[in-house]
Length: 189
Image 1 (cartoon, rainbow, N blue to C red):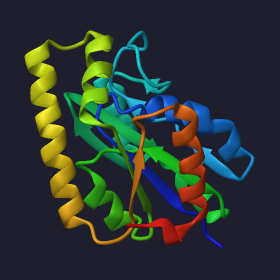
Image 2: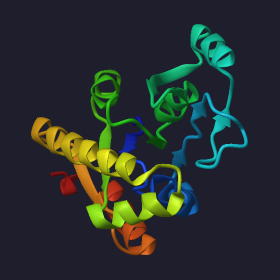
Image 3: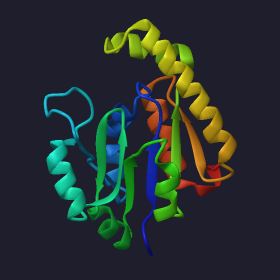
């Protein structure tokens, strides 16, 4: 039996990287792999533990067919290694840190994927973004408005297979809910 692709999406600052780090060992114990993305950014950049490559290296990898999924967002290129197809074929579940904007293309390639939308209360998200210190207050407010619009349009366009996962509270609660959602397809909204 083939494994399931689990596609985690959510706004910047929602805690995707923290959740993936916390979930790594519990999911591995249940035969689920968490994929390390390939990203065109400096290896010194703060954020997820991804494989950093140059734009030229990314283009070469893409031309060689190294990615199962790839997209461009926020001035960067992102790739999910093709190895996920082997893991899925072997019956392993695979969790990827995806892109909200790329969800339709990911669904086209993997029609049975389980999409998890990590949500966060707007005030909590604002505080997290302010604490990171990467953007000015007007930039943060513009980001929050875009996130709200994007989430509303995503929810309006999705009928099934999109699971909501609130990360406004303690990470331990979010992790517990993630493990429940992955284990129960009936939890879809």
